[in-house]
Length: 148
Image (cartoon, rainbow, N blue to C red; front, side, top):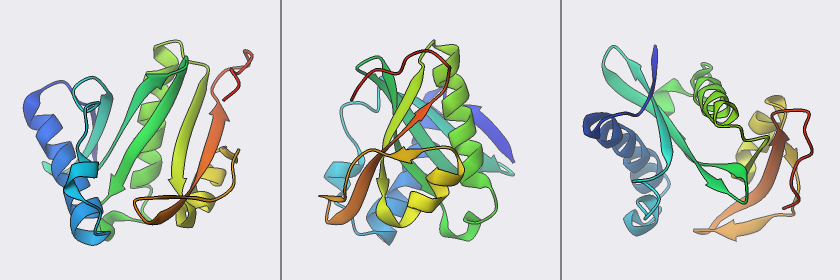
């Protein structure tokens, strides 16, 4: 497996293709939701298995925190640590940028996955694109974490 922080158009297209397969084709989320105005400015990560993109995620800065979004792993790669690789790379990139805290809106079925990575729920369940979600947070440094 090869982990890349996206630096070119082809890598971004590879990330978007993984998202499309997971969110639009598998979860029936509207393609208008899948792509948004933040794709051009967010920091994206894509994981390749022999040149084939299999997982992706991104973060953007919101209120001095890294907001991780659009974590997508092809179904045949789930349960193999690929999602952890995406999260580790995004957290490392956020830390290098000097961000002390990460927030994300987790699909409720993935809460346990994020808890194992050190995230804590900071909200109740809410609906997003007809899928139950909850907001989660993780401190990256020992500095004071901004309130959400």
